[in-house]
Image (cartoon, rainbow, N blue to C red; front, side, top):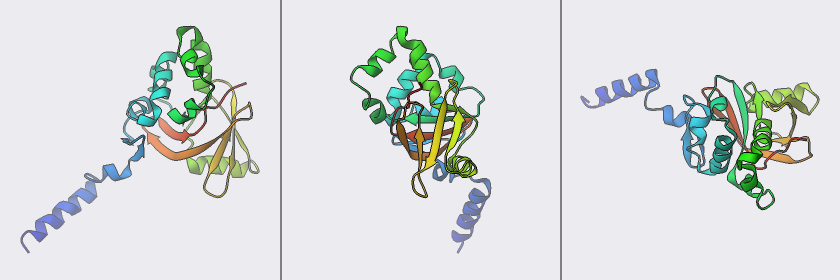
Length: 185
């Protein structure tokens, strides 16, 4: 009984402070925990599924912007999403002479504000099944429900992306992982 009481007191104190349970609250992306206390860039660099996106963000000079106060919602294409682009597209976009185009594409994936699943679903419901949100690039993204628990994102060029991982909370916003690179007009 003597060892039981201290163990119960230790577990109770851990529950009260939340210590020891923080890992349970982190979402896994690309095989790594995403920590709500870190910013978008500091989390994204650890995701094995987002190495292309991180390289593109660096090439476009957007690291400081995405480390900023926010809040930002980033619809983050995976490496597989970038691989769907025509051969040579990514290599061309990360060249210095393509910086303006790359910046426009990347900022098209950023919506000012914090839009997790609940916020997106609320916007969709308020706008009769299809919500439109402005992007940081000056474009628009459209959102619609695909079933009860999935939201699709549509770009101005008619491409659609599924959100595969929702609500990856960051200190300066939220990331929603998508399976297709979205293109501005």
